Image (cartoon, rainbow, N blue to C red; front, side, top):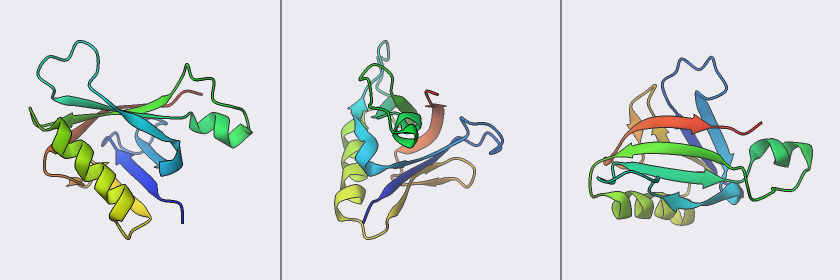
Length: 119
C-alpha cells in the first residue's frame, strides 16, 4: 500500500503552495538548505508531481520541495522520525507538518516555511 506525506503551511488552503500531499515513492531525501548556519531549516525534496501526473519523466533538475522549520540541532532526530513513520507506521496518510491544525510528526518540527511545486 502506497503511503503519503502531508504538509500544510497555514496559508488558508486557497493557493497551490498551501498544501502538499505526496506519495512516499516520490520522496528523494533531506538536506539543510544552502546558507543556513544554525540548522533550523530542513529541506525535503520530491520528484515533480506534475510530471508524474502527465506521464513525463523527472528531468533531475527541478523538484517539488517542502522547507520545514525545526528546533536547532535536531535535524537527525527529525529525519529519523519521518523515516520511521514511513517504514514502520501503520497509517498510509502521514501528517508530517500541519500548521493549520498545529499537528506535527515530531515535537522538533515547528513550522512549514514553504512549499515549492514546479508546474
